[in-house]
Amino acid sequence: MSQFSDYAEPKILDALFNGVALTGPNSSYVALYTATPTDVTASGTEVTGGAYARVKVEKNGGSAPVWALAASDPPGFVVDNANTITFPTATANWSGPVNSFAIYDLSTTGNLLMWGPLTATKTVNANDTFKFNVGDLNLRCE
Image (cartoon, helix red, strand yellow):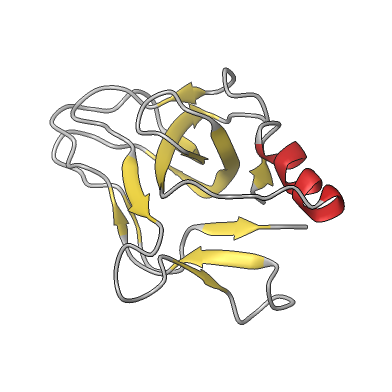
């Protein structure tokens, strides 16, 4: 189950209950982790090595939405990736097996928005390509 970060939670609550405008970033960046992050940006261990880089997901980046409300679960509780999210092909083994993801507002550092575990860990070796097929990255609000 994915969770909002300590950065995002007060912004959402302020918008809902105090009418403070909430504007999301124009782009978000999906990161991969070998040690699961928590609500705090500095926690967890982001993948390193072999051409690894966060993947940019643009808001309204094309003619179709990039995140789609899932029809299953109670409607509106889950947002799925509407397009495939493909990381660069590894030029060398990546550090440790990937076990979780995070979404940031910048390509490096930035503010952690959401994070969550993967359903299975994946070791990424040289010449492997890690990707989330359409509907595989679920951002759940509960």
